[in-house]
Length: 315
Image (cartoon, rainbow, N blue to C red; front, side, top):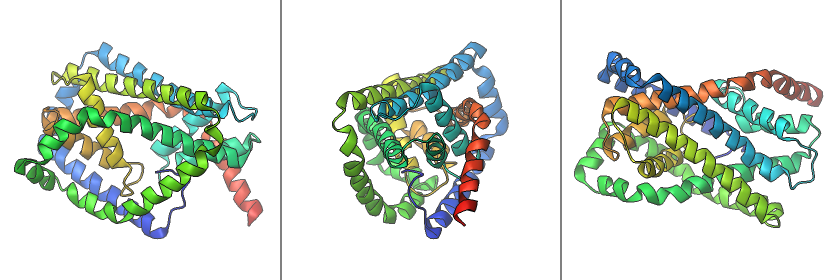
């Protein structure tokens, strides 16, 4: 779940292979649907709705930074909102554009260390930050659990799942699930040791997660409405929570391809939208998130330079 976790060569090969297979399947779905149809669907969305969806994505990213800042403020470390924002966007940029070299959490941790912040507390805050984000998504699961279960228990639902070649991904990842959840529980116990005495910080952090989720779901609702395939906001939240949980499986790099395929599969079969709409919003939401993370490019070079310098000094 976290980029801070040590990745073995076997896991790395699995992620590379899963990413490649997911992207191949995604390209196949786009080709089968037709690029022209996707382009025409995008053109259906009014410009003002795209702009509003972009602004909502910006607020979503600011909320993610606020979530981490709320955790750092009680550590008595000398950290400012502006520095936290810089490191957050640097991490987002690294996750979106540098998946083959370094993860977003590693960039954030390296940046925190360069700011002379305590490395152990900084690392723990990143783990708790991820866990609070995960908790927010888990709380939204009941919103989509009923419709998703109703689809899965039907024979057609299982045939659709197999026809998109998605279940093999789950089978690949399930061998590592128990180990990952066991490690996750261990990290929960250790990481919350400091913040359990500061419940207000955790509640504020969870509130920032709620704001992030509301902005994300609203941007999806806007784009679907623009395409002419609307879904209720509550159902979008429930379905996206499952998409998020699927991307946590260690079968791709930063969820590339996996997020898009799972979003298209779940929103099409459970949400009732067309394949064209599913592929369109999958493409748009990834694009919006990448564009919004671009400011992080201004801060990544110095952080990566510090990482490399540390490697040289430790050689």
